Image (cartoon, rainbow, N blue to C red; front, side, top):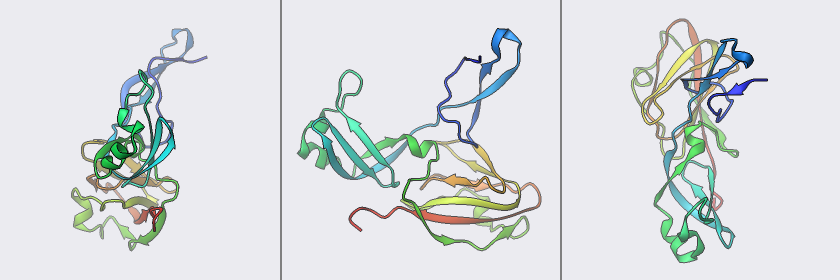
Length: 197
């Protein structure tokens, strides 16, 4: 049985790796890397729906829902108890852990796809830091080869897209591609329709 030296927050591919390790039983010395916890990303609250007397569900501008409860001492959000205070939170920012983990929202739908590019035709704009718009997700899809994608802070990681292993790009996070060899790829854009249309 393996013993944990650090907790693994998510087993999905393309996460950043730290010096934290899993150690093989009986000290055999073989070490495995453990992904770093992803930083939460500040998102704008678009709507609030009451779930219980002490709980609400927020709709964030990234398309993720966020459940917020007031259950001291585990979670202290007294504004959740008052409908007027909840309404006043609309337009304010709150952290989204799922964006930090680059989890595509459940109901995200593709609406546009770029032309295919290769290592010679990559637009200059993709090679320097750029972002998608508010609420717009990207999916870097590689048909041939490998393509590193570098996220600037707050994510500050490099991930590699390969055939069958697309890289998800959350809204408004600066990133750039770094071709290092033959590659063929395209970018899909996705968004989540709001409940009110």
